[in-house]
Image (tube, rainbow, N blue to C red; front, side, top):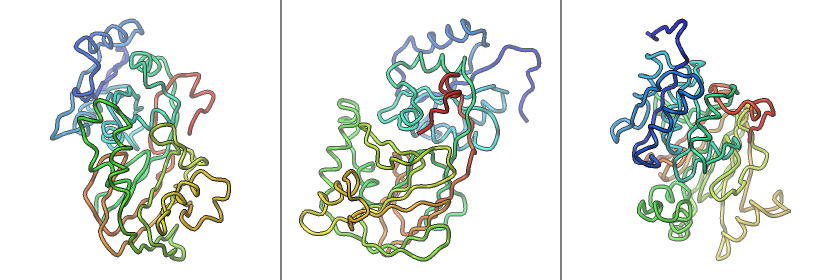
Length: 316
């Protein structure tokens, strides 16, 4: 049961991936900021390899935290959000990872962690969608906030060199992408909102709750994290210059006429593959599978962000 804290100063819980911490003095900086803003001494809950954030988020709820700050990359954010979704307790973002895609899509600065923490403590709440993904008919779904992928993009996530990622950031994903360009398309059936099947031979299927990827690339220009809609794109490179056609289909003017790229949208999507493909959620690799069911949960998660951003409705 959540502990009641009547009359006490507001409490923030920081769920932090210690590997991503900016330095030894970072905790003291956050503590000083809480004092400056009139908050209580924050709970400091470090993630572990065995528990990358869910257990710490539950502990924060049980302690009566007014806001739970996910301090790390998109993986930490996803784990914390999976616990907070549906509770009404707000999640703050303190981006410390390589991609920080949810933060970027929400317009939160990724170069100033203390500034981001200040925005949370002095901020206001917005409601965003979450998405539940069930791989290979798993009973318990996994929540994600940014993007799910089957195929090529998930292979990139699974095979990015960690040491290179530490040195050059998101460019490490480019290197992995080049290595995995060769490959054969896989027959796929895609059904949106339980409707008729769309049949494709795909290298990758992406399901987005947000539009922006690493490097500022907008793969779903119309996507909003608060619109109650999933955006899906199937990538089907054909022939020797197939990937050039994919790029043209994603970013060119005649997207509707490009057979290498197909956009779909709805509240749910079912993807059935003839052969298993790699699977990722918000940049975390989850093995491989042949069946994926994704369903949007509108307004499931409360995000605490700057008051000006919340008032302006800055959601991407």
